[in-house]
Length: 224
Length: 224
Image 1 (tube, rainbow over the protein chains, first blue to last red):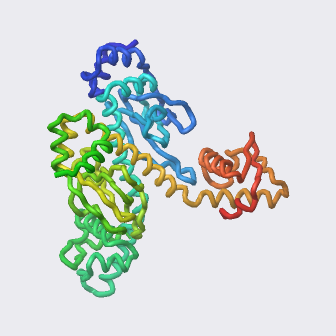
Image 2 (spheres, chains in turn orange, red):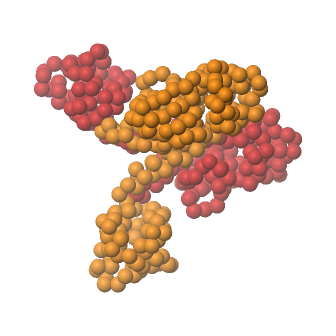
Image 3 (cartoon, rainbow over the protein chains, first blue to last red):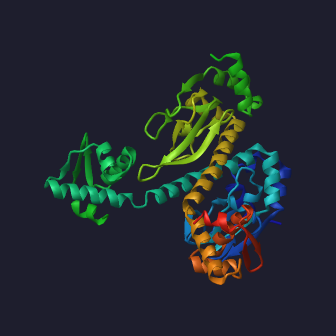
């Protein structure tokens, strides 16, 4: 049983709504429940049952995994109008991992029953594609986090090297290729290029062929 | 221009083939090229152009990203009959990251032009869904790798703790809950439970309520 305001929200949020048959639409509307979560409350864990697909009416949800020392590694956050699909991972054939989902703020959500959502996805290609599409978006966010983990201290290492070099030579310009710098700091050319580009965008260095010029020594030193 | 044997392979590999119009099928067939890669050769990098969608006729491809010290973090491997879609990431609206792809073995592939693949995905929901679906499969593999990175040394830490405990007590059974073990090793209950389960599956320990019994001390010691 769904209220009219909720119905409007569902049609808007599920962008494939118009592609559903009337029967599929009723099926979803009849299998939606409301739920409120207090800030910090857990919504979905590895252990517990498949909560369902969450449509966020207000608040904020956060998906994370745990590191070996029990730290929470945040994968992504979801806000008003967004959809949380990994909380229905039990019905997602291609998803073989699980995440934790907590309410990051007091949150109001609508929950579509997992089994019903699966049924509609199985019979309607637009629903299935929607489900896959928003999962792919999460994939991009997770890759970003993974790269942050892998590169967490490289900005520091590179900044230390650059500061050392100009201290030794007395000049603000370092005449080394990215490949040479990579060899010095024990990294790959491309990793160095990407981090230098990042420093350049921040106005810390200027890059030209075979040269790195330090523009803002003070702020670069903040990295070290 | 596509040979007949290649056409058969394309129809089979692109499981949405029957859902395409004749015009869409011709579009793809007329924009497929063949390529061979030597073992170790690079197929796709962050820097270079969008290679296209790769259909693997023989050999093996490997997708990876680089860590800060230039190590290659393998994300997944693709074999005969599989499809590499991230090599066409330039046309994937929801993919905002990039990976390296190398030939892991001498490989023969068919390449569908990126622009053409995008065009077909834009006008055919089955093609779009296929593209999203196989990307989601890669997501699962990447999550597995990420967890391996995060948990890389935890098996060792836990094995050391278990061996220490039985050495101290002289009994092969440790009377501690997973929660208590987590507190001792500085981790989370759930992380401990998962690793113990893994040890149990390998026949190293037996688990019961509030107890861990060491079954194969020798192999457990190999972890330490």
